[in-house]
Length: 117
Figure 1: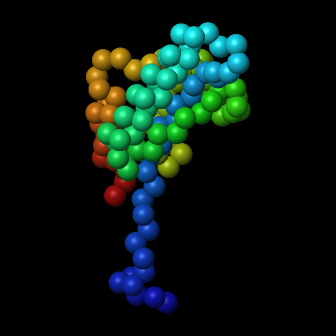
Figure 2: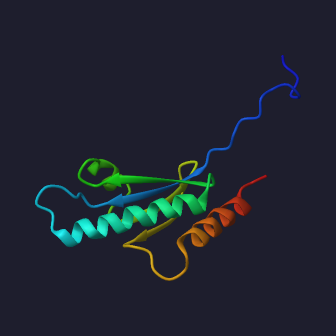
């Protein structure tokens, strides 16, 4: 048996933000393409703000309908924050108001406080 001094420290799993988005494909209206481009830019900036604490994962509803359905998708876009399989927060529609990164990090911090130690 190894001493605990030499066992590697296992990294903690980062939380995940699933961002379920509508499909954009051939025949899509120009404004939908513009919204998708703006959303992608927002998500890229959000990932930069969150660092390694939360991994942003985009899920295309047309490509992965089972994933959207599994999260009781009432429509897209939708955001679901998960950590170790537990849902910490969800929102339908694009975020408004409070900066998204601060909101997500506060939800993650609140969940960490509730964890048995």
